[in-house]
Amino acid sequence: MGRIAGVRLGRTRGPWSPAFLGAAGVALALLVSACSAGGPVVQRPPRSGTIETTVNGRASVGLVLGAGGSRGFAHVGVIKVLEEAGLRPDLVVGASVGSVIGALYCAGLGIDALEQMALALDRDDVLDFNPFSGGVFSGVRLQEFVNRAVRGRPIESLQTPLAVVATERASRKLVAFTRGDTGLAVRASSSIPMIFASPFIEQKAYVDAAVADPLPTMIARRMGAQVVVAVNLMRRADSLGSGRGEADVIIDLVLPRTRMSDFSQRQTQIRAGEAAARAVLPRMRQLIASQPG
Picture (spheres, rainbow, N blue to C red):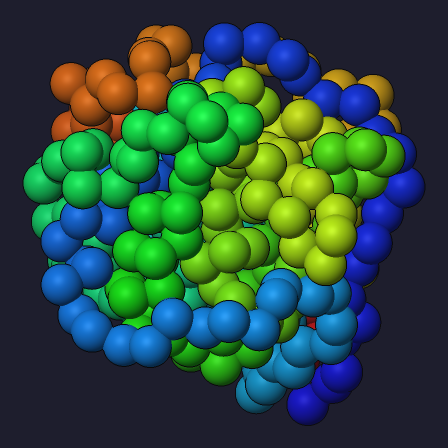
């Protein structure tokens, strides 16, 4: 069992394009079915810190779920294939839409439940129109739904270790939250500038992770993952300073651009995620076997 330090990174540059402006779309929609479960809302603010993983007899695997708007349905397909192959990750890093799916998955929600939620969408249940909040939507309802879905558990109490990545608005520094209020961390990670109000965490405002880095693979590496698998949903090369180069396996998915509220391609996106993940399974197994356990 090893202690893994939380990560706070320096200034990076990320995209500012419509591609990630749907970052919360699928994330918001996926929560609808799960949020019928009760549970207290966690009030302790998210923070960087240490997490622990236990790996017996094989290399540790870190899964990075990148930003990409409603194309994030593909994450569900990737996770489904990894689960079926017995390659469950030892830690998950989530950026924007990846943070929501990552939170639900790390909370112990089975892949069947995740897929069912992906096919049952109702954005009105999680979008709280409030133009006086600093954005079109305040994001409070998303935070509350996430916390109900994880039954009020803070990040450090989830079944699988999770790092939720967000961008500090003033400095544009990437911050990885590994403890505290799960819903608030996910809300920060998914707060698209001008669309969602920027939540404040200990007097600092945060915005969508993709503003700094849509695929923060360096987080997983610095948290101790020996094999880093990243799911890239962006339709362009990573920005200067990105951690893409820290990935051992990159699952690149070139999918049609969709709007935040457009879920018409969800089944196609899930299937595309499955196919892309199956294509890299041999490489993943080879890498895991080559690393000391």
